[in-house]
Amino acid sequence: MPELPEVEITRRGIEPFVLGRAITGVAVRNPNLRQRVPRNIARLLVGQQVNRVLRRGKYLLLECDAGSLIVHLGMSGSLRVIEPQSAPSKHDHLDIVFGGSALRLRDPRRFGVVLWSRGDSSRHPLLARLGVEPLGEQFTPEFLYRTTRGRGVGIKQLLMNAGVVVGIGNIYANESLFRAGIHPRARAGRLSRAHCGRLVNAVRETLLAAIAAGGSSLRDFVHSDGASGYFQQHYYVYDRAALPCRVCGAAIRVARLGQRSSFYCSTCQT
Image (cartoon, rainbow, N blue to C red):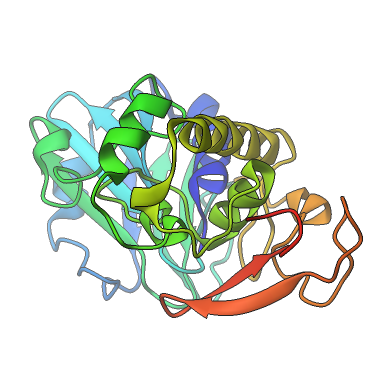
C-alpha cells in the first residue's frame, strides 16, 4: 500500500498540473471502489478551481471553492498526469480533466476512494479521527511518551495506528524501529523518554529519506509521471529476512505481529 512518502510524492507531482486550474471534465469508468464514487461527481467538480493540493495522512485533498475532493490510493493505486485522449487500460477507473491534461486513477484492487466533501474536509468521517502528522510539529518525543503510557500493545502496532500518528505503514514502521534500535515487539508503555526521542527522530529521518529517494516502488505504485522510486534499495530490514544486517552482519529475522510481517535485527534492536 502506498504510505506517507508515496502519497506525498504524488501530491508534489500533480500539484504543478492542477493548482489554480479549473476542472473541465470527469470520466468515471468504474465507480465501484472501496466506497462508490458519487453519481453526481461530474456535476460537483466541473467548473471548480483547485486552490490547494494537500495531504492528510495517506489521503490527497484537492481543495476547491465549494469543498474538497478526497482521494485515497488504496492498496495498489496511482494517480498519474496524462493527456486526456490517452486510451485507458483495464484498471484506469477515473479521469479528472483540466483542459489539456488530466489526472488518471489506476487502481487494480479497487480499494481506493474518490469522494467530495463540502465545507471543512477535516470534519469528514474519513479524516476527523486521524492522528498527528509524523512530519508535523505535534509529533514530538513528549507527545509519543504521553501517548504510550499505559499501553501494552507493541510499539510497531502503535506506530501503524492512524488514530495516533498517520501515514506510517508496515514498510516505514519496520525501518524506523531499526533506525531507533527498538524491537518491534517492545511494549509501547515501557518506552522511556529517551526511547521516544530516538523513535521520533528515526521516523522523521526515514520518511524524509524515502521522499528524497522517490518512495518505494512495490507492486503497482509509480509516481504521477510513471517513474519508479528507489528507496527499497536502501532498506535496512524490510523484506530482508535471512540477509545480513547492514550494520552488524547478523541475519535479519521476521515474525508475524498484528497480522503483518515484522523484520528486525535481534542484535541492533532491543
